[in-house]
Image 1 (cartoon, rainbow, N blue to C red):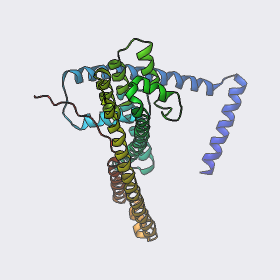
Image 2: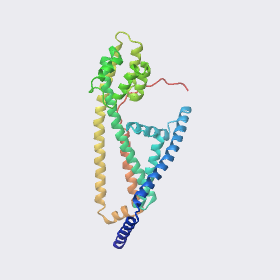
Image 3: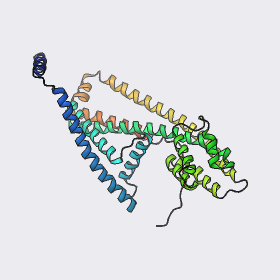
Image 4: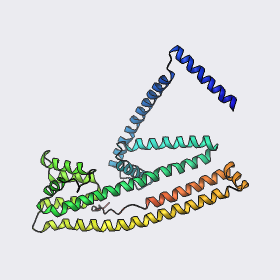
Length: 330
């Protein structure tokens, strides 16, 4: 091993000396080559994904697909991309996920020297990544929903003078509407006053930007704008009461979920500590670490832990009331 290390150092020194004498900057050339190669491959991948995206959109516009695994995956990844404000299409995200999975398999195989175990370990890694994104996405959605509720609570008491007037008054102060959603309300005002949108069109666009959490307010705002009668502004007070109930329920749920996560982590820690203690037995250590069946058992146990934690996180979504449209008869 020492001879190999010395040979490598001597070889690198000779190579660096010759490159300096001959004026060859091999590092820059390699970097340029890799950059051009990556740009070319990424361009082909983007072109392929644009074609796939176009075909998917056409297919979804023609046929309503059943709620299968692919549809659930597409909705999950779309949700992640919207939560993190990533402007990449679904197909490109899928390609990146496939590349990450392939790299995880290659690296795991290099260290574990077993393809089957490496596949299982790579699945665990992907589940962990999806769980982290799911958890962060849930937190971001909860923050966004709370910001929308705060905006509704500020606008609703002023709505009897007109929804547009109420939004303009609330926008004058910075503390009532969160900075993440302020641009959408500013665009709504500009659409009504500058761009010539009708109130219905401007509110529909604002509703699309804020999502289903804003459906109730948007629906009542349009009804109030076009059918205003004495005492009708009281319909907005129901939204304030609804938001208060949702906050109370979410606060209770958050306390329960924190306790559940803490209990899960404590139980997992106890199992890991027991496993580490068991490794002090030589035969058990040799079997679990050095043999293929032992590695297989370790990878399966890791998968079970990751799947259990991911399933628990998937259940921990905040309460959001959504308006259901009328069902069409098939």
